[in-house]
Length: 368
Length: 110
Image 1 (cartoon, each protein chain N blue to C red):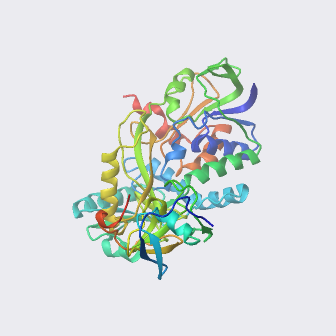
Image 2: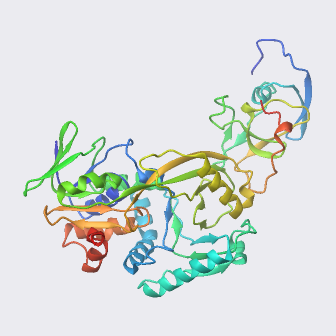
Image 3: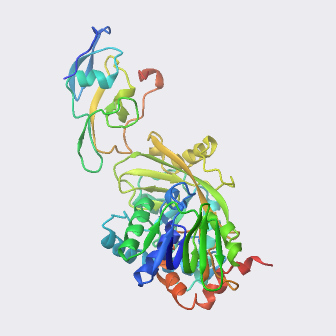
């Protein structure tokens, strides 16, 4: 049995990101990871660093995403240096394409109005079809236009997780794999983390970053994680010569040449399966946006579960009843990674988040 | 390098292999027929341009890719020899501007 100053439950992008930040600052950290049987959003996700459209009703969340996106380039360089793993990160901006003028009007109006409310500018703009064609000549005739945000980018999520865990360990962080935590007790002096076979670890402080698993663990520590699974289905094509120098919101070309497409959002419980109607709809949409992909083969498809809160915003919480217990339930584990590894990790080791962040992302917002 | 355990049963037909005329047994598995004809490498990889030859022969590994009748990245181990077909080495990744696949009837797919 191990003891640590900080035990983090969950070895996905959120848990590993927080662990990376804590270990880098010299803290003694143990990452408890359920293993590859977990519903690992880190493994199934699309790999977008995404800003535009986030926080339309919450300038605090808009600024959180923008600040994190602005820190991504430096974070990626640091992590590549440390781990030796190429992340295939790029931040050339991205288009959110609209297939009708009405949709484009609605979206552009909402985004430009929100832009005025945020502290950090995102540089989002409305562009017509010819402006997209100047960057991606293959864009379909039926595309009405797009919103473009220069802060949007992409990264290979699998390489990212591997690099993050490698960097975390280089800073002295420990990983325990196959550690599914079912019960956590706090006795006022520390925490005891238990799996099915008994005690797995003890810790002075504990951070819940177990994705969908947070829902069951949180109440044991006076925390709240009202998260539910929202499925996305994704497919990837055979490798193509590079033709996309930047992404489209649900389409991106990887550095290896494959085109990844994912745009579904489904309430399907804990079912990770793929379904033909959804994949067919995605294929119809991708070929409307990029008709030249019509004869390109799909080589693999998969489903993955988003960790979604009722309003889509992150939930960050510090327990009032169990001092030293914290929670992070986040859907955007890729985009927010520089925040989790930086300011959030610092907040855990210090006096918690700045009051405006603490208030905006506390689960108390759900109590009405 | 490879020889058949039995006498070939298909009649020999002419196909185009990288622009040359080659005689292959009609209806034979295309990857097998090309291996017996001494063809190789079948393709080069998209990222590092390394040469590749058929490996699994059962449609899984995607090492035996070739351009067939203008359609890139086809698995030769899943195709048969058809008279007049044109086979070209698959060099690296395909482009999006490649030819449209022919109608299924003309493809000779098993």
